[in-house]
Image (tube, rainbow, N blue to C red; front, side, top):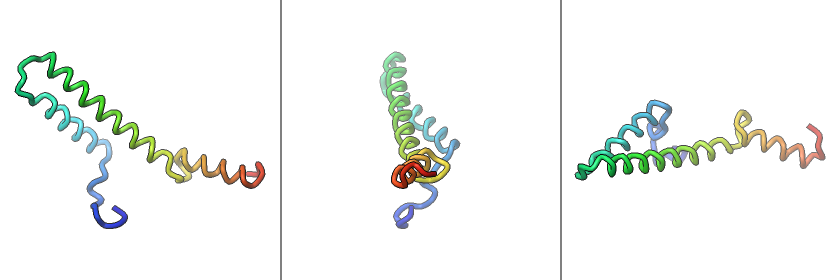
Length: 87
């Protein structure tokens, strides 16, 4: 996005996450297998993987050194440590 290779439309909020979750669920259930147990297992695996990807992404963004996020607090703590404990 910053280099111009991708557009800002690649960033999604809650609506984009819901849309993507629906698409993942649809793809997981669209198998040729008629066994509902297999479809349920496939759906659970797909949504669990999607939840893991979202968790890692939020964790990485949360560690960015922006003052409001945890990374900003860690940056301020590091500055205080270098200055000898003075805020």
